[in-house]
Length: 220
Image (cartoon, rainbow, N blue to C red):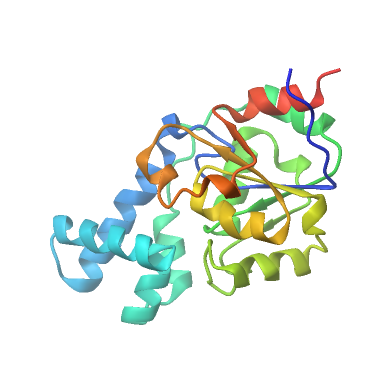
């Protein structure tokens, strides 16, 4: 069994990290983003998707691109795209037990909204194990992997980076965390977008199943 990671604070990404990508929950958000852009810019769905992915890669989130280029009100966008059915996410009693046994504070850090995070955490059955959620509004709509957002997060929650672990499904979002001194864990689900801009030097641990890995951390 690999040696346990020690930390005072555990920082978890939300979408496709705390629940498996196979739930395809983000597909619902993806479709609603396309519909929002199509209506906003009067373009067809093919062009809307091109714009959506272009902004995601250039700005860190589609929302940031829409804000900077088109003056979109972030609250309107987030309310629309997160109006989804979270029932495809199965409750995860194993994850809840592992989090309960994991020493240290637990936080969620997401480029989504706190409301969306709350809905997902409740569905998973793990909401009570998290001290707080740092969402895109808390980051003043500056998305990962912009270092300014990470600095804001560690200040708000009094995180000592050298005593923190960050777990993400997108490798590029771990680059600032590693630079700050955090221990980084990349959840590699085998998706191309997860490995985009992958920097091996910024990855301390690579895993393929979060619950399995957490159970290893608390075993014994």
